[in-house]
Image (tube, rainbow, N blue to C red; front, side, top):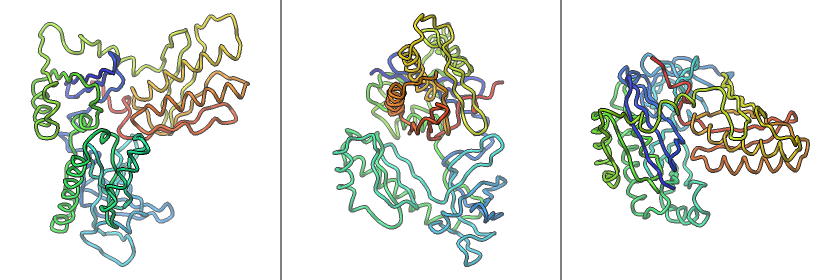
Length: 397
């Protein structure tokens, strides 16, 4: 599989497109204006102060400097306090180290966690969760080997998770990165007690750079960056973190043909915002995000097959399933997803559809689970949230 990364900056927004076999499969956007305004960014670490406790929902609200954030009180037992007021696990006025674990969404406040995550390219160090874990996408033998080799690192203070990117990487490289993550964690612990409340202890990497860190490098043949300032920033990052990618990093410069025009990026982006998605054989999807979940309706549309048999409906549903899996990743849809496929009374055919949908979702780098099918034949899918969906983060100007 041949992979490419395309990066542009337009009207203060950095766009990153991930391409596989000449098809755009992911679109990321990062609003630089929000960054310049120092809006709390996913991954930032602060010293926050407890402003309010809502015991009946097991939650508290923590101020990180003008922004009140939601906090799950069950984490308080393992929290790192810089100023403790009372003897209860959490009291109003307590000051503690927290990390943005979920950005603000519409009317919902950001979520913070005292279980800190330090993410590297090959591993993650987690406080509050002390297990040694390995990505389920690695082979069973590889998972067992990593657990055996990392067994000596087990402790009661933090845990280690080996990422999928560690596949085929020498163990020494992964171990070196874990040591670096450990130093970051210990530095936070050492210096936090000497910092004032609301201090930002660590700024997260720019999302478009962390996206490069997380990309699979197998088959990655080219990274093209159009804006010169952006190119220099990416180059500087690679020199420090991933020097092996410098040879495939290229500055795109063409006054007559922009990178967006060359790859038809604007059209692809606009289509990814459309409610309706046409399928190859005449059917179509209607994709409607709501506050609580995303609803996808499968329609036969212009399909002109004369045979309205269960097999025909299965064929349409299988084609729709393939497109749905693609659109979830392209649009970065997360949370609860309900899919209303074309009804099939044959339970065996429905099980075949469920099996195919699970195979397709299993290929998504983001954890995606086909839960079940309801009595109304609505397929339930969940997809882990790692960043805002495209329709939320694209602010048209």
